Image (cartoon, rainbow, N blue to C red; front, side):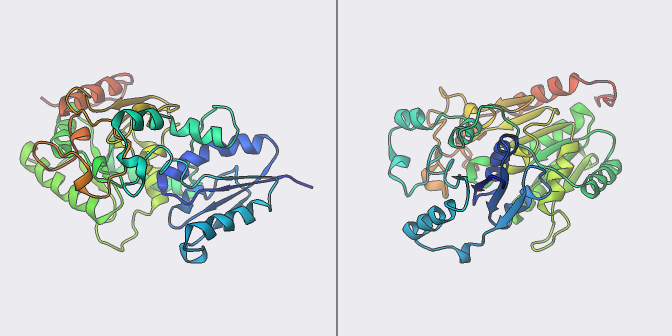
Length: 349
């Protein structure tokens, strides 16, 4: 007879990777672990050694009203010795949707409610100690493919993740930062992302780098170029970024995939606080807005449209993430890379 623990998280890439942190501890308590997840981000849990059964739930298979949806999972909970439903454990709980009353409460009270570590909160719900280990587990074949790709780029590279899922997770000065990174560190930069919108941003960055640097040498793209193309599925991207020597990213799934990895990471924040995101991460630098200049930061709001978000002065991005200077990104990048200079290329003038 074996004890079973059920974990349900019908979330996005980052949501699922946050949940991965509790799995080793549950397994260590002697449970057989079943994880319920939703397409397409369920692939994060494939090949995870702490999962005994992965169940994919499709939206069309679940009740479409909230009361019946909750009853469904209450019913499922009786199948296990322990059951933790983690859907909405971040969104609605400490990051608010505009259709909720608390989205519109005062900044002061919202910050009081929401300034909680996402990892710590997830562990608390699962009644576990704060021993954090969010992790993605590639297969040997996926690792070999990533190394083969890296060999074409060079021995070292910087991964630049273009954007997250919401408008405050796109850094509007990416093109200037990427162009300078290539010149001032001497390292190639690989742009990463997953949506057609992010590919449009990558094209714009490439055009700008060509003008600013006089060439696009050193700039690479690791993402699908055509909608529906699948040359860079989620698992390939999550594997490849593990081989970066520096990761620069907004709060997004690819960054959560290396949260426990030793390489340096520079995280550019939008609506969330540093304690929300990088508490429990390994070797992470968190850059964010100065509240004296951007009074709405952190808002802990999930912005689905521009009307609820304070724009920057150019009106091409959110004021919060825009307050991070290119100079800060460059100086922090050089500091991170300087810790391991043995194979650092000679800097270009």
